[in-house]
Length: 209
Length: 59
Image (cartoon, helix red, strand yellow):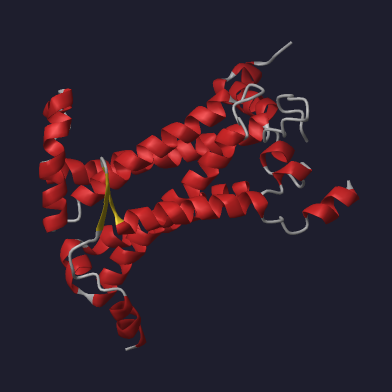
């Protein structure tokens, strides 16, 4: 007979989370042999680059545009932000190509694949709003070129690329939250479902460890 | 001083170079990045992963 404490939503949620993702599955000691592949190294590189992107972005937010345009340290952090984004996309695309040719959605892993693709698309939007937030001639050029395309979709009334404040807020608040949440969900799904086995091995969800 | 010399190797304060081929119009910088990505992808598939053979024997 369950007690009142057992029926509390926190208790039920904890039991459900532990059943879905027990600690040994969340942080495993070993992985199947086929996980020894450079393709996964690029997945981890993507996350490492994302950490640098966020850290350098926080530094840019602390000091503001005048700092990143004029001081040598500001210019360095600005470049660090740009180049970590370049590495982020470089590694993510190689990871994505690899997973595409492995058909990584097999064995009930569709949501893992979909969260990866949606992360890629969201990251493109984040990078785009970053270009619009530079506060230089480059951002002016990109925003005036992009406005016609966005307006042609009818979205310009809600998402105005000429509105620097709106684009900056999307770039430093909404989209980074979305990217980090999607990456976290993607990694958790990899832990829950396991890494997709090679084509020659039978596909079993979560049974590959 | 060292970084100024390195920076001078790649002049960034000039107009960008573009490749035009039929309807394809791409900057040299973007083309180089795409080529590097393809080369890295092929290398990631072909390069042996350190310790993989040892792990396989162990299992």
